[in-house]
Image 1 (cartoon, protein in one colour):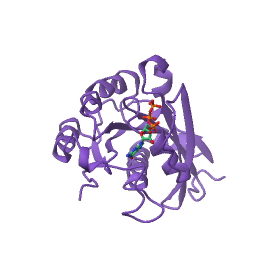
Image 2 (image 1 turned 90 degrees about the horizontal axis):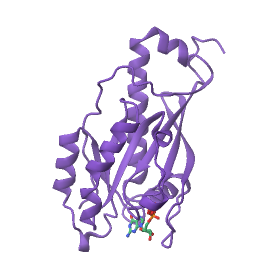
Image 3 (image 1 turned 180 degrees about the vertical axis):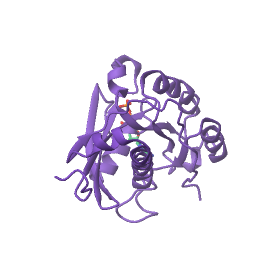
Image 4 (image 1 turned 30 degrees about the vertical axis):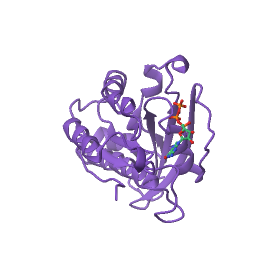
Length: 226
Ligand SMILES: Nc1nc2c(ncn2[C@@H]2O[C@H](COP(=O)(O)OP(=O)(O)OP(=O)(O)O)[C@@H](O)[C@H]2O)c(=O)[nH]1
């Protein structure tokens, strides 16, 4: 393919999902990738990933989304899990405050192990459990604001209050992160000839080299609270 021909170009971005055990990481991914919810899902052992595609600006953008165990005993977390990630969903359960209180620890782990330009979204999952809510929308927003994260409340279970294809905000959350990554990369492309050369191959797995060193994703807030 002519390197100047951007039509048909494909991008492959790695995204990681992190958060305490049983906050719904695997179900968010299965809802997004296969529109499936499993009420009896078992704790993840090790790492799983799924690939999803999205068309942006006429280009095929693929997200390789990694899900890992939240339980300490299954975790051998490591820089390998985070390496090359362009995006991260930091998930807590709105009905369990301890999972929200763990978010700063997950953020630290992400900062320690990943490269620096990572589109990050704070996700308050299980917003269908309004009757036993333990973390307010305002608290979620406020943490996101102070850390420069996107914020969204989701429900991997509830598929009744939006279109049949989207549980509450699940597709929206993933796609917002993917679009932000794409925008980050596009800006880099515009600003760097060498990066552009790197992108001119037909199919490329982008590895975040963190070369700009400083960028933080700006907050953009949305949630499903009604
Ligand atoms: N009510 C409700 N339950 C959910 C939701 N998402 C997940 N669950 C339930 O929460 C439990 C844990 O879900 P998982 O997706 O396995 O959680 P996980 O974060 O992947 O857990 P680990 O693999 O241990 O890290 C399961 O019983 C799910 O059915 C949700 O949005 N609403």
